[in-house]
Amino acid sequence: MMRPLIEICLEDVQSVIAAQNGGADRVELCSDLFEGGLTPTIGTVRTALKATSIPINCMIRPRGGDFCYSDIEFEVMKQDVMAFKEAGVNGIVFGILTPEGDVDMKRSREIIDLARPLAVTFHRAFDMTRDPYKALEDLIELGVDRVLTSGQEATVPEGAELLAHLVKIAGDRIIVMPGCGISERNFDRIRRQIGAKEYHVHLPGEEKSMMEFHPGHIYMGGLLRQSEFTITHTDSSRVRSVIDMCSR
Image (cartoon, rainbow, N blue to C red):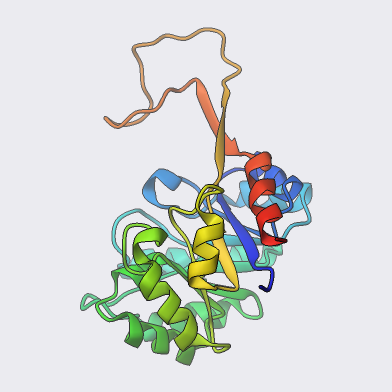
C-alpha cells in the first residue's frame, strides 16, 4: 500500500513546530478550531513560516456558520488570499456555496484565480452540498487540487463508504482527502477501508498555562467553556504515531 500524505489541522505556531517535529507532511493553519477553523492572523502565518519549513496551507474563512457569504465577507476572503500569497504560504483552503447548496462556481473561480500558483483545497463546505457527486465534478471543473471531506457525515468513520466511492470516482482528477474524527486509534483501519492518497488529522495535546494566579470565576469565552489555564497544542508524539503507521 502506497504511503499516504498526512496533513495536520492546527491553530498556532507552536503546533506547526510540533507537527513538523512529528514528521507531518503538511499543515492546515487556522484559528478557532472550536468554530471548525477560521482565517488565522497574518502575524501567526508569518511567524510560522519563519519558524518552520513544513508546507503551510491557510484557511480562508471569515466567520463561523454557513458557507454562503455576503459581498463584504467575500471581499475579506480575497484580501486574505492575497496577503497569505504574498507572505509565501504553500496553499489556501476555502469553500463557498450557493444558497441552494451547490458549489459557488463564480466566486470559487475568483478565489482560485487570485490564489494561483498556490495549491487550492476546497474544505468541508463540500459536506454541506446537496449532491456530493455534482459537487465533486464542479470542483474538478474548477481545477481544485483537493477536497477535504468527512463523506457528508459528522465524522470520517461514519462517512467511510461514500469516501471510498468518491476516491474511486475522483481517480487522479482531484485528491479526496478524508478529515474529521481520524486519530491514531482508527487511522490504520480507515486508511485500509478508504484508500485515499492524503488524510487530514487533528491530534491535540494539553499543557498547563503559565499562569499561577487563577481567578476562577471569570471566563473569556461563551457558555461552552474550557479552562483558561489549559493550553491546547498539537502533540508531536501523536503525529509521529500516525506517520509510523503510514510506513507499515
